[in-house]
Image (tube, protein in one colour):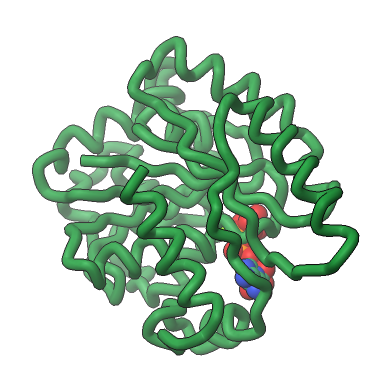
Length: 248
Ligand SMILES: Nc1ncnc2c1ncn2[C@@H]1O[C@H](COP(=O)(O)OP(=O)(O)OP(=O)(O)O)[C@@H](O)[C@H]1O
Ligand SMILES: [Mg+2]
């Protein structure tokens, strides 16, 4: 079972959009997929129209139900929804569980999925730490602006620290999102992305995700990008990215 965390403590850099597309895309390829929404904003849960009345990751973390009881099915496969009060729950956990809780509960479903894809909040919080400690791969989305690469040192330090306790963790790469090709800017940005990747001892994925209105439209329609418009440029980009990711 591959466990993939999509993270960047910067807000609004297409983490949720990338999780949604990876999740739905891998499911369409016949893979057994589970998405985990670890962001109290609940954006991923909203996109996949989860039933809020059903248990969430909060109930699982509190020990009120098992992960299997909280999982629901949706358009992208199975999903474990988030809860707005998830941050408070983290503070109630034991010191060990504040780091290892997700890793522990995922053991209960280790034979049920090919891919688990985790969405994280825009913070280096205990939720993000839990995700990274449980994961085998990290994908870091960045936008072609200088702000989305600020704070990279903190993220790189955190990931390096987690590798000391989770040797299986691999930084799969930096994914350029919301890409707009502009002559002149492109070379300058490419240098920046490569410096950024070096900081993480990883590569920049060849596939770039283009900026497209179809993303916002699909999210308004609460559909994943492939169901919304499989011919949109951005769907083609995400499909290519999934292929590149799978091929390693
Ligand atoms: N390729 C794209 N083209 C156009 N808009 C995009 C693209 N990817 C994401 N967006 C838009 O950018 C905004 C932020 O995306 P998203 O919510 O996925 O980011 P995030 O990193 O999960 O944000 P947060 O840090 O708040 O969780 C959304 O409005 C989304 O529709
Ligand atoms: Mg998000």
